[in-house]
Length: 639
Image (cartoon, rainbow, N blue to C red; front, side):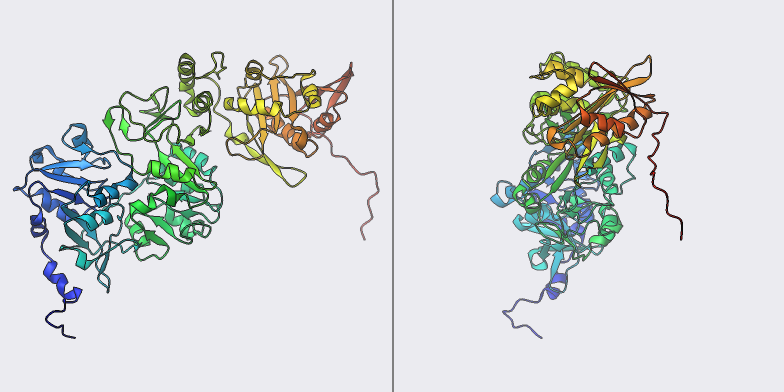
């Protein structure tokens, strides 16, 4: 149908009129202008190359977050033409920022669009990359919507590289051809960010993080070996969802297995929500026209109030170092700006306000070949605090997880020392004592102490169909042991300590916490494995090196006595003792403590007992198995 003289041409007829070469397109950039460049894997490669070749420009400001391409405009030889301002520092501009040839603007990723929308940062030209238009004339921002959408909507001139290889991603992720001033056709491969397989260190960290995940949780994941290691341990979970800043290839297998189906999300049920992706071509094909995946601008995905609407929200972010008070440095190596604030705080705060949410900071315990601890007494001079000590919740290393939120400085320091590399723990504790962060007489584990025996953790079923979680004692359990003591009846205290104790101050608790997971072992029972759960039972043995027998003692909170807790404890403690080469148990039990006597007699090993002055002295050798009771009734003859 022909158009009337006053009627605008349909977009397919106007498209060729806007299409020029890359060199012609960047000719629209003038001296002194501020130019925005598209993000991540969505960098407009042909346009960036053409812009960097312009010899007639001067004093041009280039702004963007992380890009994967070559940033020639940040090279010293082009310093008179361009100056870069990084909202997140990537490897391609890190030297320029460090040498003062480029600027860095620290800002929460979710708040960058407001700079453009308010006019505080005026964008003259937005150079972006998009997918080919659909039949309605809409191009998708593809692999990077993030701050690109806002920049394009606020720029005076929009130059778009229309890449035939750019996936069409659904969501709030489109721009109409009419809103693009200049078009450049392209078919260059999209930048890929290929990740290697997680190493053993990442797998250990990933396992600890996976222990904090529940069925039906919604995850925020980044890129790298630690997020991929977490995904490796989620195969047996059910109905997980994704609301994230970005994700990579590791999500695909779990989607195919049905582990990630987003069916229990409380916001955008059934949808993976993100703002950009970086990965392989396989990932880009997966997100292309996939109704499960929606890309939204970063001011939405990273809004803590939006994030918090996802129940059981789990955020996983990295750190460079964490000090003993819980301050998290994630953007600088001392005085050197290394990366950026990014979306860490957005998701930490969003997950913290989510019902059942858990914000997690993950990092290896050391750097530089185990010569530097990343748990430190104080941050390096000049280091920036990205996540404050008031925001931090979980910190995870390969040695476990520490829960810090709402804890005292003393409790935080002890928790972080315990997940530091063992060879740095004495130094860290000494520093904490010098700064009066912990008790001056705080015991410490010797350097030779084995790694926390994670293999001894187990769930045990009780007689009332409930269950408890058994694990080795940690130095950080002192307040939990103290809390348990004051909930015991006088009778239970008397049975355990053979005398009436009315108080359990720090000095006495110290001796209970002095374990080395070998000659001295303590197991505790808790209602759940999450940090902060109350201790409801304690089992302890101490080996006599002369006999190789270990003296054993048990304590169960009154309201759980008679449910099988003690029996489970003694069997678990016997397993731990046998694995450490202990020959057997000895124990002293008051004659009137019938419950504990029954527990020992049900341990699965023969019990030799001797009564003396109202106390049974028990000996339980492990080399003999207790005979199963046989029925005295005659067996029925077979028919």
